[in-house]
Length: 185
Image (cartoon, rainbow, N blue to C red; front, side, top):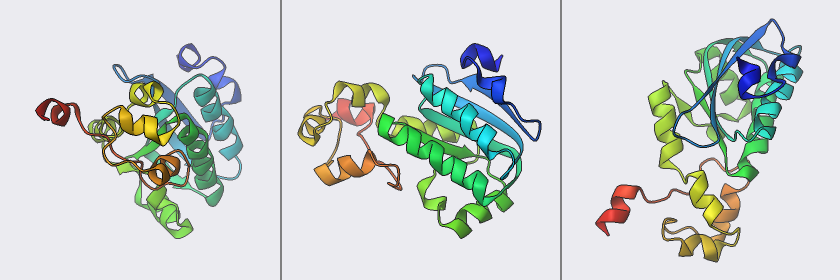
């Protein structure tokens, strides 16, 4: 089933970390990756290669369901950061869903918890992705901040904020006005 969504996804499979893919209906270029097991030095390369295939297949809005990931070493966290670095320049994001306390502790100790939105369930994850600028909005804007501001949906986005959002290390991207606020103005 994974190979139907992302060709070749299971070719790098590792038994210590099971991954299952699910497209997010109604949200372009979005994918849930259900993970089960642990992410450490030994399997982080497999995890990196597999998730990289998903990004290369066009999926840049990723929800990683980590409810069944009971451990992540610094190498595992490094792989998550690498994944974030891949999707941010493509106007994507990585949401960590249902993260276990041990994994969250490693993220915090390494200083990377601020870079990832953490949610409890899929509804919260989808709300987070929907709350931020959606891909069609970014695709309709050129990369120039003045063009971004002229689309009418980027409330108060400066050149610095635009460039920061497009960088992987930005803790949170600039927010767009919702469809409701557009209709009200």
